[in-house]
Length: 180
Image 1: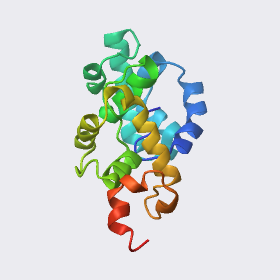
Image 2: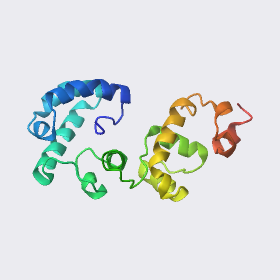
Image 3: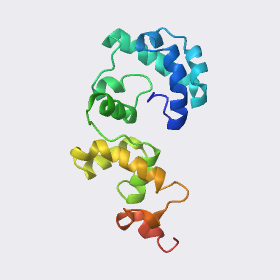
């Protein structure tokens, strides 16, 4: 599901999940699947042809190298098609309780930049800035807190700075305060 989440909403991914898992309930069935058939199931997620190829290829590797089980290291996850640091961080945190970093999505990127925690353009560099800014004990929660803040308050188009609990610490608010 995390591979499907790229460039789409959780709502869209969750809508596809029942049909995908009904047809392909495990890694072995996905490994044997025709990518075009998988693409037809996940079409609404966007970039469905590439995602289907990645999902099938990743499932094949999982079954060939790991007994159809998801590996529990960043290095092994990053070697799978369609998996970058964001996805690997999410898998490690949710599936194994391992906090290896901070998953940087569009919300985390926006909030980090506005707060002044990072000016890096790339998610991997933003993650490194955040890892330096926060102790490891809170890395697992930062992602979810920033996503929630980004969705509910720090909107891309109309941030609600007036109700933001971090406004006093926010570079964006300080710079835009006169306009707000």
